Image 1 (tube, each protein chain N blue to C red):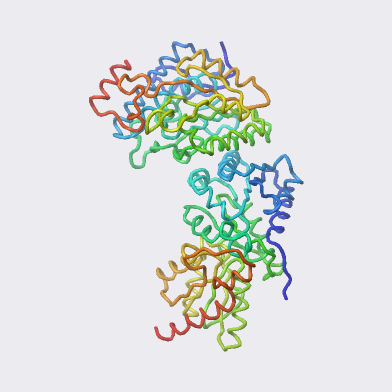
Image 2 (tube, rainbow over the protein chains, first blue to last red; image 1 turned 45 degrees about the vertical axis):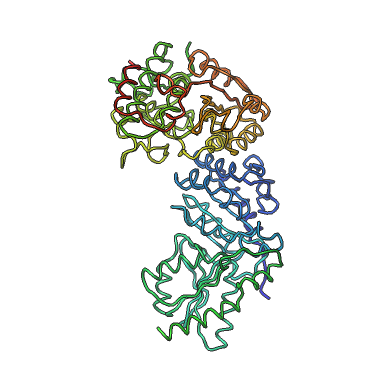
Length: 315
Length: 298
């Protein structure tokens, strides 16, 4: 088994590191700092930390006011609450004026597990991507999380980072360097391309290994920046492998699959398949059980690639 | 009666716009008669620009005229020639639909030419239908979706305190806007953080789109609500300059808690057929009505 690490811990520790370098970094939370791991920063820099209580809308607009005054606010809560609960505040206080707020939402997707539907964000990427000017990032492991958090701190403009709850296997080594807006080729391949983000990158790599044993040479792209998406990498993959499968821990609507499909339809129409949550809510269960039940495993990706390749032959 | 005004606009005649862009009007004396003259000009601008645009929100713009006149001519430290001046006091318009009132103020102060007021709501105008901080010099916050301004002001007040900046933050809310839950989230937070550099003003004109507040959604007891949330509360006649000036002076002196000025006003104030008429919340005067309104505001 590959080494596992917590993205949330990585986020919390990186905030402290950034806080030491940059006095303009301030942190807000909505009564979840032991879960989002902003607690490390809050302990180290209490004067620059603002726990707003259970009031996400208030937190978002306060963060915007801080940004309008030259601060670099990192505001955190669960991904079901931001953007879900405070969408209009994000729209008018942050997105429209293009203020430099960094929303870092944890507990994204079904892998939240036993807390159930109310806590499983499967629509957050769709919501946040609909806001003009937002940069949206979904790291694949703890190492990429560290890099992404540092990258958004340096970037001027509204950003959303989605992290997961459970520890995840590392797909990168420490020498990895995240580049905003760029896809990362995790594995070369010529027969098909799997484009994944977040927790699904590890599953995509596992699927590619399985497909390899079936004689299918599959490319794997990690697409950590969902918006703005790396169109060139998608078009190149379509050109060179002739079919694309997307994999995401999110609804089929409005997330990675929809975004890639838009690029494909516009530039290089090729057969596509989508590994994502269908039009439904999930339920309580262990993360692995939920991913299995709602079709988000390496096995589901393998099946989708086989289906896509068949369609490629026909077309 | 001099205030700590490093730089204010003078209430000179609107034709002398060049004198109003100066940043060096330190300690300019502004009499109540001057303020009344400014208020009248602002009201004329408001009805004219909304009338010409054919849409907009006259009622809640007219009710807040004395409040903003007091702020921009007596209270705020600001430099119209340098809207991003770091030490400026901040004015946040939370009730963004009343932005014609703020455009009129900003133009009279010299943030942009008075002649531009006629472009309200037109394609490519800097004067959008609701406040847009990316479009208009002097607008601090994009608003129009009610309830967000107090929270935004809290962020600015927290930043000012972190940086030991001396600026003060003022935020204007509507009374109907206080229906929004976020207002009370903000009220709680401002008191929790003891933001005595923050003053909220409630334009308490008693009306909202669907009718009187007390019929649509009762806010009473408004004063006790703010008090219970930890605020210092001052009630004033929102059309009385002496009371407003006194309230802002008192708010500045209150330490350890934020102050809210509940300004009792008349919606549509100054235009007889708009006064206390909910229908003129978001309706422009037609040509005849505009003519009558301007005659009343002579």
